[in-house]
Length: 109
Image (cartoon, rainbow, N blue to C red; front, side, top):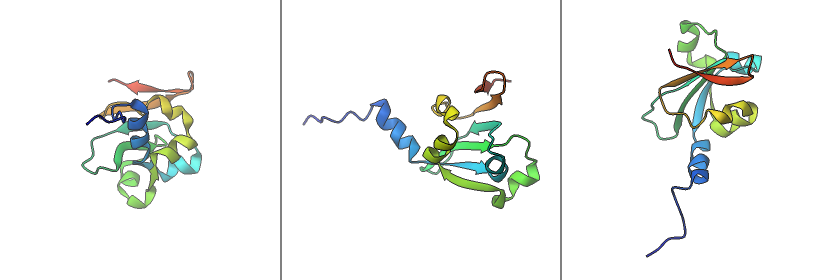
């Protein structure tokens, strides 16, 4: 039996990723700024692995669950369209906002 559907289609994979969620710090939301983000592995299927932060949060702040919100990745992308260029990045990657280029650059150190 042949199927007309091509599940390897990148647009389908991208749509699937947009149905997942990400964590965003309240400080990033309050200041309308993402200065640092990373993608990690998650055992939870609906977790994209993305974590978005203002960039100057202290460890104590990050450990308090009240300082982080869960948002649909599509909602985060609508808020910060500049993220589109990095959302397909592999897990275990980090990025920071570069003011000079107005884009996210990968941290490789």
